[in-house]
Length: 361
Image (cartoon, rainbow, N blue to C red; front, side):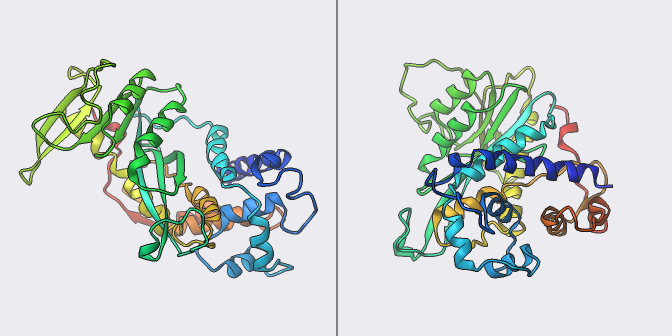
């Protein structure tokens, strides 16, 4: 019972344990922060943030400590302020590495979508990363790269600013991708850039990028710069509403037909769905702080969406599954265990979705 859930939990906890041994890398003041033994030590704060839900901070603290000797909210805030947001980015990357699960492939390719989204923060005029004060709100911009077949976040970045940094973020993602599997990068309009095309091809990967429909290619950034030669295939097709869609790709016509490219691009929608789940089910938008650094902690912690693809006509209720998994993660070893997978199976709903990895290009 619970063999796989326990493996996942132990893997995640092992990442946190390893960070405890080198916590100087993840705190604002090395040699000073977390040098004393407190009820809210480094590892406990990390686990708390990873398992926090959408309740108020006080309620989350009481639930986390089972209403026994829990610290005050100000004490918690004082301690969490010492941890860098990069600590939670490290957890995202290291946990994926330690799980070492072979991704689901689409005819030998790993399909990775890149997209960005604005995150509106509570207004805080003292916040150094404050943006849009005239709208009486702050915001961060989130960029992610997402495995659309395995439904798994691969990497993410957060910064104060606008969409102007999205192409640069995509380039950084491409630079750090492992070379274990061939990759097709799928992105929407706004990312069309010779620089991104070149970085993808230099890694010997491929791409399918939607671009705006036009009669020339002047909409591609730096299109008149002839310092770097690159061959791009453009595919233009008519939609049911009479409008045209244009895709730029490095995939050869003799292997990937227009219909195959349309199918690949359509699968990009999974990253949009993952944003909806992360924001409204995982509670990504239910922040427990007005400080951008602490919000980044929570956002990285919430990028944990993972579903196993199913051929069956039933799928789990994701909302209930997340609540059950968080309860399982919070439970201490001396707590009486419950059958996690059996409990999740009590909340199934019908689904007619087919497995896209079985489609032919």
